[in-house]
Image (cartoon, rainbow, N blue to C red; front, side, top):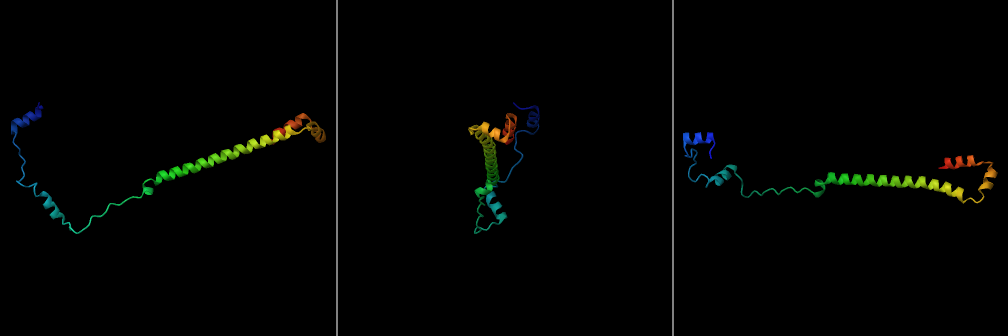
Length: 124
């Protein structure tokens, strides 16, 4: 039950308690401590400082706002870039395809089919 060291201590010194305090010491301890502190009973306690919600979560709020702005900017750039390139290609193809007199246009401009293909490729 006891370790070797504890057995030696118990055998040498016994079970007697060697540390004692005077009778009633802990009964008057609170009053003695308060007397030493010299606190005025009329002095009011300082209320706890309240931290506004904005100060607690401002780093998170700034991060969220920045993320939303970057996302909106990226989405707008993607939509603007995507619509521009697709509309130019669609416009060139629709112009060439909707022309009923494509042969007449080629004869008037003295273009052959290779020149027409390169023109359409450059317009995209």
